[in-house]
Image 1 (cartoon, rainbow over the protein chains, first blue to last red):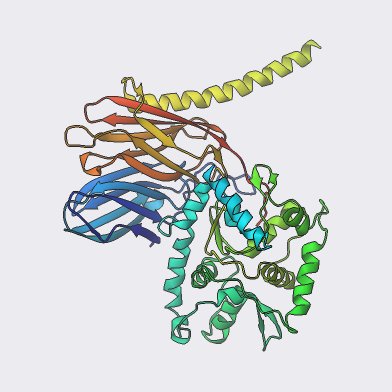
Image 2: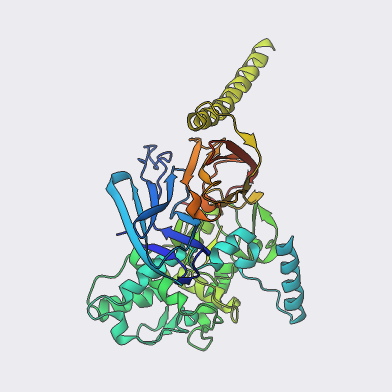
Length: 106
Length: 243
Length: 144
């Protein structure tokens, strides 16, 4: 599975706005490059990233070839309750990746 | 503006101590520095994570023989008493791989070797470069210095010309750094992946239209050894980000 | 004399046509998302380095001024570019739970150009922000 790095604060106060960072290894081949023989290298990108908080989707991103390799994303959400944040990536050639992080909200 | 002020302040304080040496970190934009500073945003950390997993695997696992690797990367290239020559960190990893783990050596610039060297280099982050300069290594250091100063390639240029004479000036929009390898292996934005110092050296040689040395060639070891001696005392910031 | 002038102007026309085609592509991609709506300039700000060190990986942040309450929040942000082979960069779906309308990522920029972000609010209104960047290239090519 692709390597992913998630940064979620382990604890937060209820109602606090927290910052979430997610980094996943992926070549994000644009489809616009050519090899040394002039042959086009086919597109291979992550297309969708979602984040769910205790099962409810709180953020979604649609990526295009203009997103840099090893896509990084940072976004915010309100810490509502303790539980699990789940991160999912999917893309070309059946690519999927998944990570989870726990958060304690007091 | 703030980055410029900081750079000037650092330059002022360092030259007060007589040290004009600056890491490539200081030559890059604030945004690139921010990318490196945050472990959650530094793409090189993805390889370090893979390296950590590899470190704990294998038969026997690296972790079963080696406990604390702090300071190890800072000493490399190091003289191997048995092989009677200096070896790079990557070569040392492969010595262990073949002799202790009885497996095929990892390919240069392959995912495994990059991940392991990133993980090991991370253990020396913040430590000063400290390669051994003694009777064993002096001939190789001198050979490396000669390579550094040698004019070569169609452009008939030496490393010294760009990196000693012209550092701080611009080449096609990029600022020329001083060539202190404090950050390797590093995530180069140009490569869109992690790469080794040897990859960068091959790129430089291609740039001056010289024949690039092969990976692991004696010239590579000598040049890296000399560069590390030239950078002695500078803090490692591996695995770094560079433009 | 006349033939040389003709060749020069033909070349200039072709080049002009190419940049117009890509600017048209960005315009069309934006229209596809707006679906007839007219965005107002404002509330959306884009953070991009004014001088980009390497177009392969450019740190990018988009912010929308919005209270982000259950009554007034950002539904989505769509980002476009002018000169890449493709006009879309990314789309982000937010909502009241986001707390703040700030998203950061890293993008690819093929040339010095304009980047546009469109934000759709909970009341259906559209806002836009623009940034111009200068993109330089790495100095030496390499044969790995």
